[in-house]
Image 1 (spheres, rainbow, N blue to C red):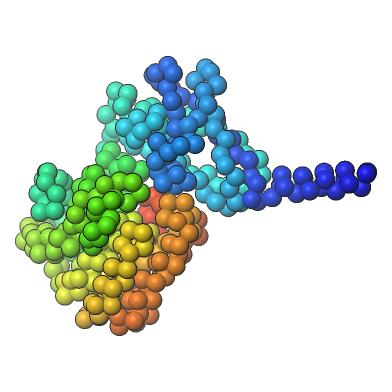
Image 2 (cartoon, rainbow, N blue to C red):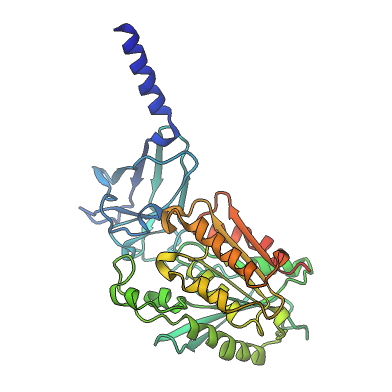
Length: 398
């Protein structure tokens, strides 16, 4: 009997210390302007960034303190989330009034207590967030043929643009709200302005004009989705109704209308060897597709954490690559973070690898392609900006 008790205690101890049985408690302190009887929920990559999902409401403990006990996670997993009062319209923000970066915490494999403090709420804040733009960013109003409504195109100009006759390469980017400014970004900015200022200070040939087009808001997914699937349009994805896919129209607009306009207004280097695309998530998907579709105009594409999801694109993207062989020398950077499974699903590595392999079969050689699995990589701007300099160096290496 004594041996049995000792054995049972040992088993319990092993279970408690197992990397697969980490106990994580989140303690949140809210600001004084939080309404009484508020319901706090989490939106993160563990629930498809849906703060209305069941099972993610926090428990009120009184005196502005809320508590949440996470389900068990494996050691090393990074939890990415924000605190809301039930929806993204009531999400937490920084003490400056700006949208804050996602919160990131690494599962240690042991019992963890995470204490955080919410600075303010987006719907209750009286602060106007300061701009974090560095250098010169010209903002113009535009209309796209894809979805109605006025939008912004944000154009970064290098520091010596005004006092020289120099021409510059151009990088076209999606999700323009998130590229230069914390004030407009939804989860931290990409800091492309800071990177270009650094390049310019060092006299780097990578110093570029950066043209960032704002996304289409609620229609973002469909503007960046190149393929129509009648069943998905009719019934939606993840329970959400979908409009008609406009990705091909967006790609043609960028190449046939936006690029000629930029080349006319600014001292760009218009040749294809100086024209690049960069995007992440759905923006990575449309960047890869646009570069393939318009090889005669674009020579480089950086496709970060791209939404190469079979449940989203089915076999359409692989079929498109098969039908669109290499016509010109090009370079593609493709990557995915090893902490993006909660959002994309367990098949994302296989789905991304398949795109890389199909590009090889389409005629692009290995020196033209780079596929990376980013250790600790998460689905947010801080992770993407941390690897951008290296990506640009690789894309422009001869």
